[in-house]
Image (tube, rainbow, N blue to C red; front, side, top):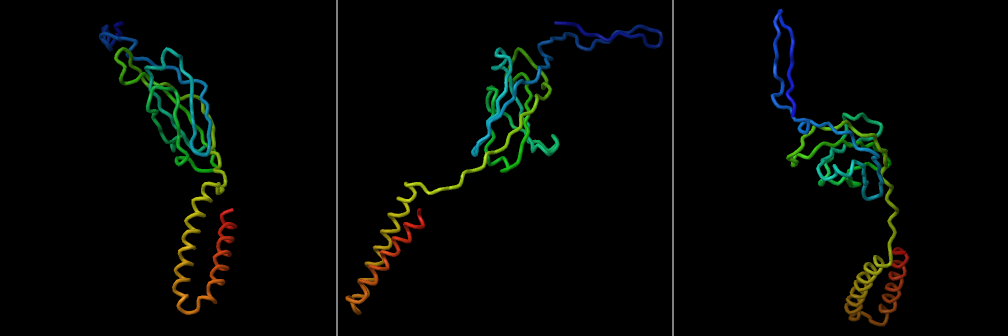
Length: 194
């Protein structure tokens, strides 16, 4: 520990003012900012990670800021990683499509740490990223199966019900037309699903 005092001559008299009776440097640390901040954006999320000395990893906490590249840092959003790992994820829902973003991070000793205390470091260098565009939605085979089976079953029930009701009138004349109608419906449905 250290004893920090301010000494001065005021109105011809020497005075000593004690600033910190007992100054412990480990309680007043200012860390260097994180290094090598990098990002990887996909259509669903953006992963951002950075480097700090290995012996500090478990005692640090971080604050990430991100903003649209064209705007000032005053408009930035803050994100606190849930753990002491030097990484964070931003969900795609938090990002606008087709817009470039910049992010930076700073660190300090965790509030849970008893031996050391610090203030926030300066901000790191920035990383720039952009949310990947969502691919065009295409119907896969499983989707086609799930749609085709209920539609086919529904049409069969409809035709059966219609046929049963119309048999009272003239069964011979309506059944071929309903069968043709059912076949055309199936063909159209298959065409749409493809």
